Image (cartoon, rainbow, N blue to C red; front, side):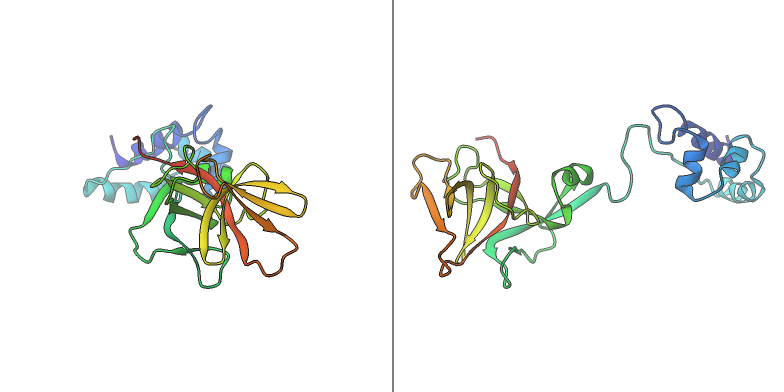
Length: 215
């Protein structure tokens, strides 16, 4: 089999029901070419310039490999989320990123997109047992810093002065309550009076996911 044959047959195998492209027109649109060009290639009616290139590639032993159906080989299908240390950044409003390049972790981009804004997400290691057993000491949490609106019952990372805490949100008239899940935690709750301008606090982001080791 030649490179040219492999190319045309590979294109054919990517078209059809439950495949990458439903029809030649869809493939053409994705490739930015006219549909009749794709159709003529598939019928071996057009390809003089491709055949010339193919002869060269055959001569040097080049092979073409098409992605298997059902696999995700697209560039950018994974998004690298930085791991951060639990302290506020200089400007506040976000977590301080660790300077070491290796502290990034790859997540599927489609999974992250369903949960929020991937570009605003960070990983953070949790210290302490105030949110046990849901979140325990040493667990890693995925935080979306674009989600700062506080919804009752959800878990957020919050800055109080220069301290970073992970708490579940409860509300009372005029107050935000930062609650610990662990009944033995002290304090069990932190009250924030929304009318008190002297308090320095702000939500950093919502906790979307917890990663933990089996103990």
